[in-house]
Length: 327
Image (cartoon, rainbow, N blue to C red; front, side, top):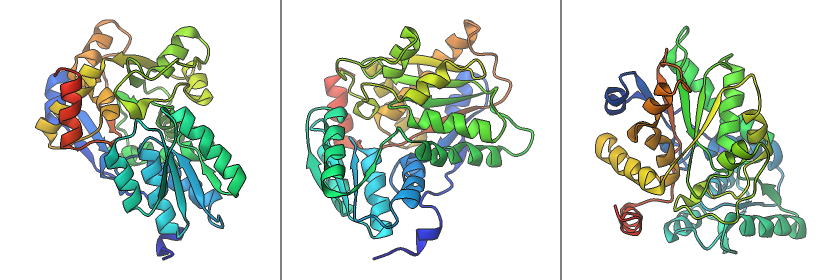
């Protein structure tokens, strides 16, 4: 059924909530941008919705390679547009993601061990069957769509209020590029961005340290949704820009999972480990350490945390991760 939403956007304007638990820990106001409340469960629907509207209106079908959230967003948007979707996912994806994709009406194919393998198959299929390829993170239209997250933050904070910093998780770098684009759009280029990854899914941090794009041998982190072996070129180029202040930091899987647990206890919201990487910057004391080291100024405005969300988690998955990581 074709949707009447075709001329509007698919994402919702998500709440910006003051977080007492985090604010108390940091001694400064912390706001949570609740992207977990998007119809597809994560921020991905912003960029993917925008891209599909530009490229897939007359498509005979879309194909996306995604270990989770980009796939769910693609399947959701395709269903709303009345276009068939095929989602290629690596074998590392949890069964609950497969189920979610099928519920959205997608054809699901499991190919390879990591995202890069699934992506090669998606590109092949797009070529062979004339489908529209939906990139999960590396496309200017995605970043344009993701930029709306910052436009909304600016509108919620109101005129004259500027964040002290924005905290974001990095996988392939799509959200980071969108956040930077959003900061440009609202003239907040001087706001520092703290870019968080887990050890073992740290392609952005590795590139920043090496001063050039780096391809990881393997993704060893359990935060599979951060698992791109190479970060997108645009994200790396932003990290080298003298006009921007991007601080790249890592937490362990244990710290990311502990953050997921604390967030569930304190905010009654369950997010996946990829999102936990950003939350861990507050819960593990990293933000405080960056301030002590003088790498992050004493926050003059509120800290904005992008709670990117995620569909790859439920109580069973949480228990299994806690068991695996000895928490």
